[in-house]
Length: 452
Image 1 (cartoon, rainbow, N blue to C red):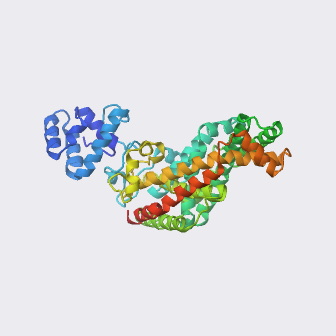
Image 2 (cartoon, rainbow, N blue to C red; image 1 turned 120 degrees about the horizontal axis):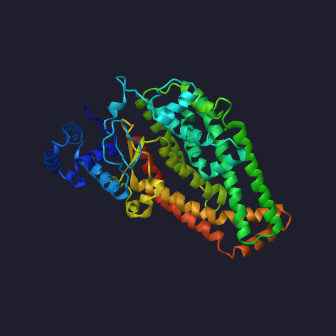
Image 3 (cartoon, rainbow, N blue to C red; image 1 turned 30 degrees about the vertical axis):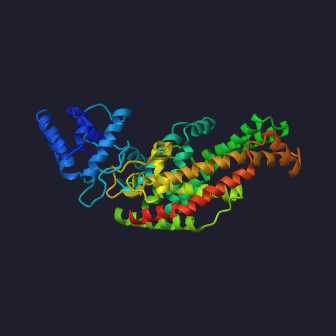
């Protein structure tokens, strides 16, 4: 029987079945000796490992495989021993294995991922679709699954918040935003609909946070009542939007998915190579705009929040492309960010990109620089969050008629005990912004995209 190994996990399973430890990958000679010693256990499996790992993987690629297997062994990431014939998508892999086995003679995908296949069938769109569109539909399928799991509107509101639907909507919004200048109207329609949904999810979350902050500092009852009304109004608006556009119809199809699955499928995506070229050009353009746009760190919403928002888009784009971008910890073009490879941010959920097991030619980004961007976005977010509740509660004091602007300023500052020194917030934000520009963070990311 011919054995096909298509992912890091497939190979790890093969090593486990043969009783081989990751250490045999130290040198080519060690691996040759180890495989020779177990060839009688499963000749077909040993032959497959020899062809793939010995013959087709370079030294550094074997090092990456060894790292993956070591991490998987510690964290339980590898399934039970036994070799699967189908591709396994997921895990910490950063490179492809035998992607050609997934493609037909013309280089197109022979089959889509199960969730994508089901979504296409539900909307009567012929598949399989090629890899660029499959990347988009991965997120759509996850959103569709959550939205179709609850038929009661009130329960659905609670469900989408607990399941963090906003995260998946963000990814779909991001990929459609990026493609809007490439595919025009079909991508723009998806961007507009997903942005509307994300805005409603975000506004409900924000009004809940504002109310909780006001209650925590014992704000005036009239202010609490006003913020409660704000929260209820935002919840009702979200429920209304879900009922109108995002709950399944009689045929079990989510109306909001039509623009995504049906209309966008008619776009001429072109080859994977052409699509990648367009994506790189578009992301380079957006990064250059971010690099050259000035941001006022004395402005909480229009400066600090806006810079954070624009910085955050790049990781959204990178993650939304579902494996096209990978992180390389060997490249360190900016020495100031190299220590971040040993910091918590390097292991956090914010710096995990989907694996490249379905990509022919993934684009590598310097992991240290990517960590630098994410750390900056998180730091700016923390500054924004420390000042935002005071901003909205002051505004609520004025709207509720409890105080004028000057009175609200004095009262809210006292309520928060001067914890959030807004002058210091702006100073700290300016230091972060200056360091970003001095280090050339965005410029280096742009160069990595262009040359990857």
